[in-house]
Length: 201
Image 1 (tube, rainbow, N blue to C red):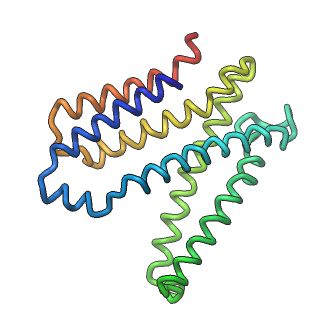
Image 2 (spheres, rainbow, N blue to C red; image 1 turned 90 degrees about the vertical axis):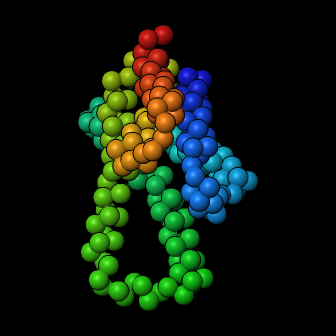
């Protein structure tokens, strides 16, 4: 966990270096939506709730047919129950925003239905697929309770890694200096290393 946090901190330094290299106009554009107290509260809440998610998965490990269930699918019943709460929360907030902004009529706009459904299904499938990987990986770690404990931490480290890799692919770091990119790559390397440390100790 300490190495994972170190990797995230190094990536944060790269982000600060990127911000420092922005032009004044780009900084004004970025600062317009910047709210440090709100961002910090959301980050802390998200981290806490992510831990709660893992607790839910852990307590739901018995919701399957044991050895009769393929290791890749053993966590699915627990995931269904845990994510149902997330769905209810998101649905309630969306409906609140519809009421607040008077956008109920958007549901009748058939021109965007196909596009919205496609990307909602794609986002859901990609997000959900990580737990197939988590379940499959845990199937190889059953002999070590310690490794099972670290499996969710490894998943979070890989989430940060892949999100930043996509940022590189989508040219979010375009125009940054070599030193900034080097710090980013060091942070990514540390995160990847953190995923292997539990198997090495």
